[in-house]
Image (tube, rainbow over all chains, first blue to last red; front, side, top):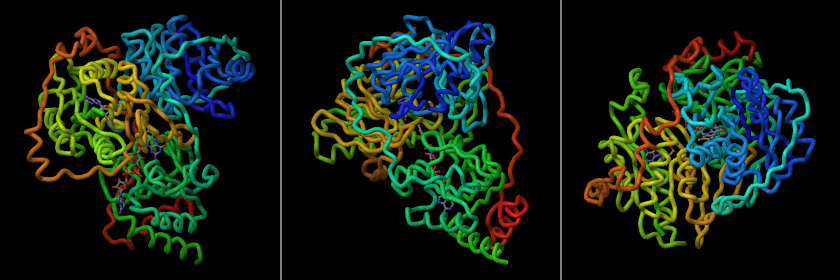
Length: 325
Length: 263
Ligand SMILES: Cc1cc2nc3c(=O)[nH]c(=O)nc-3n(C[C@H](O)[C@H](O)[C@H](O)COP(=O)(O)OP(=O)(O)OC[C@H]3O[C@@H](n4cnc5c(N)ncnc54)[C@H](O)[C@@H]3O)c2cc1C
Ligand SMILES: Nc1ncnc2c1ncn2[C@@H]1O[C@H](COP(=O)(O)O)[C@@H](O)[C@H]1O
């Protein structure tokens, strides 16, 4: 029997995160396979209806800590540690996302619990859960079992599908948790700043992704020209967004958007896992990278080992010529 | 102010990394180097020192690992740390995240730092979690993936990207911060610093010396167990070719796009 507790993250408007909903769906499935139950934790200003609505994804019960702030990990560690100790959960499950990593890690320390991260699948056997984790650039997958109770499972982005198979309304229980002294020493000044214009890339059938290999901000022109020649849009990696080269709204990956265009052309992108999780479902992936060992070559459909400065302008011209002629 | 930088020795990027099927652990033979992500932590410490907003008395590089991990400490010192601490003990081998975080917290506790800096990830383990584990043991506030950090008396103002965009967070010291690789451009060590690194103080500590409970570390103290190692699902390999003649390359790409009706 596995009783599983899931953290459901929400934004400032109260919308639950898709990956959290996926984690609840996954927990519900695993719980039903093992004869346990799935429950969720929410913090902050979440209405009765919104909390109870998590039942639609399979949560039997929702623990709500209204006085705990959303958005920083440590207060939520306090809440989850208490809910787990008071109710005896066997596992804590997180959808992919940065906060899940931090909360899961905090629980590991607090409860002396084993943790597995970047989990792509969870198997139930004999009432216990085994986490599958790809390691070493996805070149092997390890099956990880837990000695401790609880076991902490942190999913990879988009690992768990959202499934509205629940039976409706979840029971909502308000919990009062006294925050640890150190949990109150970090305060959110501003949350979720978008930085840069709001660009829609989700609807584009063709995306040209630009990475640090472009060399400098100005060289995004190469990506823009190429995208324009194909009627597509331009996307970016965190590295270049953090550097201020391109707007956050164009970022693909773990803390950005997830896309699945007909073509994803990655230019000067190494193909780190956190980027890959946001674009690996693209129908066709074309990569231009000067390093033949770049991870992107492990999962692209067509890869060109070469200098993007030489290739991109000529490619743009050739496509324009082809379209014109 | 005293800053401790956690640094790790990892297999060189050029080394083909693999798991040892017998021990189910990472095969750590072959060339090793300082985890590139940790050089950003040391650079961040150096910039705090040079920034002048606060007085930095000491920057201490701290690692846990086998004897060879000393070399990572030498590199950290060459990059600017004043001295280093090496936690090394046979009982620590095979520690998982839970055990490693506990052991690192113990050795850090013995140093009483005002600020602990880590890299965003280890190049081999890629767990992204050690910072938050260490912080909870030390009962300090913490934030990971920080890409901007300003220090003023007793406080840090940090920026980082989370699920909905950029967050700005204020944190009281002492604190544990793991820095993203966009936070700075680590400097190259001078030849003089490289030559002098081995002469800087290096303390070697055994587990017992920093109060580590041997039941909580190593394989015995680990709370996860690798049950099996499997190959990833078969995926049809894409075609990868080298750009020798760019006109030909472009022709090939256009044909490929055309075939798939993408242009
Ligand atoms: C918690 C967390 C969350 C993250 N979230 C995200 C996310 O949402 N999205 C994301 O993208 N990343 C994310 N990252 C960062 C991710 O790990 C990588 O650091 C990032 O994706 C790297 O971006 P890049 O490929 O542009 O840069 P790099 O990894 O530096 O790669 C640049 C590539 O360009 C190539 N290159 C250089 N010059 C040329 C040239 N002239 N011609 C051709 N090729 C060239 C190089 O060979 C290299 O492979 C996250 C990381 C963490 C830890
Ligand atoms: N054995 C270790 N010794 C010192 N620091 C470590 C060790 N393992 C991890 N770290 C630190 O924790 C960071 C994150 O590692 P990880 O959680 O494994 O991705 C690294 O960048 C290091 O700063």
